[in-house]
Image 1 (tube, helix red, strand yellow):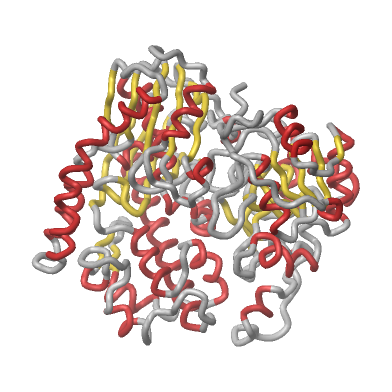
Image 2: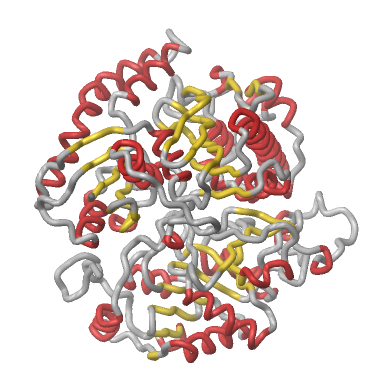
Amino acid sequence: MNILGISAFRRDSAACLVRDGRIVAAAQEAWFTRRLHEGGLPQHSIEYCLRLGEVAPSGLDMVVYYDKPLARIERTWRMYSQVAPKGLGRFLRDFPGLLVEEPRIPLRIERCLKVLGYHPPVRFLFGEGHVALAAGAFYPAPFAEAAILVADAGAGRVTTAVGVGAGSEIRMLHEQPFPHSLGLFQAAIARFAGFDSEADLMDLAPYGEPRYLERIRDEILDLREDGSFALNLEYFGFVTGRTLAGKGFDLLFDGPGRQSGAVLTRRELDLACSVQRILEEIVLKRARFARAVTGKRNLCLAGGVALNSAANGRLLRAHEFDEIWIQPATGDAAGALGAALYGWHMLAGAPRDVEPGQDHMQGAFLGPEFSDDQTHRFLERNHVPFRDMVGEERDCYIAQALMEDKVIGLCLGRMEFAADGLGHRSIIADPRSRRVQTYFNHAVRQCPGYRSIGCAALQEDVGEYFEYVDDSPYGLLTDAVRPERCIEQEGPTWDAPLERRVNQIRSDLPVITRVDFTGRLQTVVRQRDSELYGMLRAFRRYSGCSLVAHTGFRLEGEPMVCTPEDAYRCFVRTGMDVLVLGRYVLEKKDQVTPVPEVDLWGDGGYGMSLG
């Protein structure tokens, strides 16, 4: 049975094909349109999944949309009813459009399928946003039974939910309705502080103090013992206006919000620290509640809040659960995967196979890949100098380049359906290098210097570098760097300039060690990713270190690179030194040609690999 899951018309739209319970393909529309957080109809993603799965025109058995089209109408009505008569103007602008557009979603999807040559499916069904996210976390997990915690900005009508999975059945036990949203709370503070992403709050939190924690608790967020909470909607603009943060933030947080790009002050650092503390407290309380009401010893995490690796790491170290598994594709994109799996297990009634210790995400390598012939044609057509290397020769070259402080972009195999690069669309560097520490963010990623840089380590050696984590397959856990690797700091550093604190050497792994002596970790095993595993083995052989600094292959404000063209454009526009396109290795010093201007998905002899 071929089941297509779709998430669309919100943020990070995506599609996923599941055949007889196996995930065949999954993709985000932003990869193809090159627009970050693309939220339209995922036509390219749908086409990719169906073509890769070689689904016949009449072979699509079920389409599951991740949410109920009327749920957004209910959510919007609920939100405005809580603050009426405030926000009447926005309500009158938005609500009539929702009444027209939301019921048309099934029609738009069916029309898209017909354009692609597919007959209407036998069944067209709908899930619920938070249930789709829960399904996307539980069904691929290596647990027969588990508690489930969903925390998101607003998955349909529910923002935070606790559920339980057993066999092929999922039951939601406690739901917190919109608009009381942890994700929107974070987003509002982030925008007030002048950031485009909530990730900035997590990255800056260790540099501040929780000076605003009590004000948040007293005025903004009523937190209960079970981890549920209520927002004081008077402080938020997303209910009545066009902004996330309301005017009350100015009085509460000592002045007007910071403009994007303005100099960071101590206030923004303290705000970040305060928000991170309250978020970690909520996640911990909610997880304890999930443990109490389900009685399960394993936990599955889903939703955009699950991207917060620091909160995940604190939860792991609290030992509330024996094991924690986090869906690597968080947010609405994961809703497409969850919808397809929900269709197979809950709607079609199929049983679930569980392999202890082995999830069903296939390393999250579910996206497009490009053959050596396709890549070679692209390089030859654009007169790009390269070297042809395979296997151990290539791995040894990469290991030696890392030891020379070179920063390397990797574009290998199938793209990862994940929030960040996991080795197939990644940038790697030597984590021990002081040059890389100060150079990586500004020259390569072109993002603020305080952004944390993760690492990828051989799982067999992870205990040499970190204290608690045994396995972190998708880089969504933060762990303490082993004390013997850390360097004692001389004197207080709270009042030192931020740039100086960011670039301070805190361990013998300065690139990846945060100011609180933690690092964000991905563990690598041969079964999940043989190529990155081979590179790490070679690097260990040459340097004695089996860990590399590691992040997604993208520029600030752009999606991850998908095609070799995307990777090459990023390579020549940044301070990257080496680009690896499968078996072809490019060095920056050899590049003399301009950035090629080609149609990514055109007929010029280069397109997606369907095999």
